Length: 113
Image (tube, rainbow, N blue to C red; front, side, top):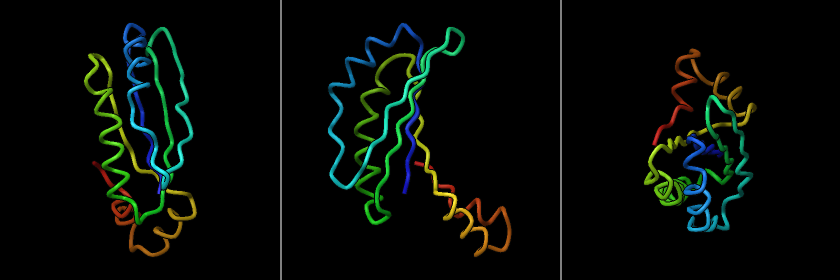
């Protein structure tokens, strides 16, 4: 399974975000992390994106970990946090094949927390 964590914040919050990064709990052994990747612009501020991959059997543990990790950032004024579930294209195609409609397939891999 793949979870993507997105942060969006104004440039004025960058020092606080960087300071909080050192306080985040380490990634558990059952997860791999790619990122954070960083993009900045004068109009949109700073955005980061981190990709977490883990086995479906660890969904609860992964959700608990990510909630703890990103709670730190939610306490910083101006920081927006979003955590999304993504699937590999082959999984999406399999869901489409197994479902009766596109809406049903989308509902099958739409998970929000």
